[in-house]
Length: 351
Image (cartoon, rainbow, N blue to C red; front, side, top):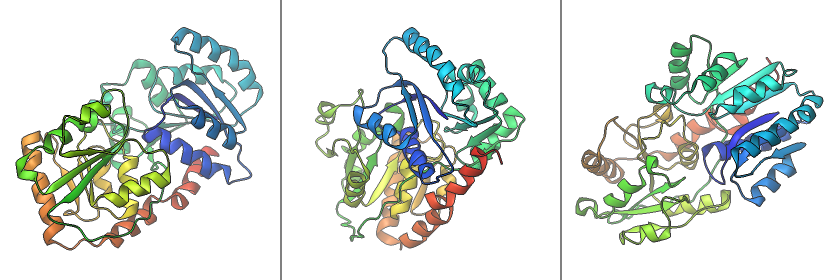
């Protein structure tokens, strides 16, 4: 039984959830059902869950009181299903509440997606802390995050990475006069969208061509028209379109102030063997295979300092040899679905 406080059309949790359902569905001994308290996803996404899950309860009313009323009406029906495991993820006050009502499910697995660091901890409400303290198993996305959470919660926290998709791309020579660096993901301020736009107009970086894929209410197509040196490519909807996007760029950038756990975007970039430059948040450092081509931005990096780091990073692309196969092999050893599936099954089955 999967419980999700909210799903969007795109995002890290949303991507993991889809792969989570796809992977578990392949086991005939497992039956998956999903309850969503607040959906902002499309009808196509809803149809996906109806195809892969035995039971689907999706609430998408705009009024929060109506959503909770609908949830309470569903509780007796869900209890009658006698689920063995309750899997919750993300953050939200409703997680602890719904689990109290689902009193006959003994195995409660909660999945925390963000970094678990001091800034992340400040966002934890009293109700969410009860979730972290009372779940049978608490899972973090990376070993570093699990260690931080264990220290503050004074309980065992284990690490299992999120599911991601393996992306295969064609290797093309880099044009060093126009190095293509791209961002792919949600268009929110915390992901450094405004900074990337400003960088695109920086003369010192005239040998870099910036690309952005994604969607969000804050930054629409008209916003990017103010930055003629930046290529806004719209949103991507599936693995095929993501593959096209990654085939377009030479490297990936994630300049984030969000409390990143272990970003799905970086996992998929890693699987494709693309170099990347990213803020040192959460478990991102665990993805580093080569310090020159998996470039960590120190905490507190501002726009001015970021220019220097980008120049260092592109110098590495020009002057050093990147063995992309090492990065791909590291992904398949630690993060590919076939490696993770048994770990997830063990905790979901209460072992």
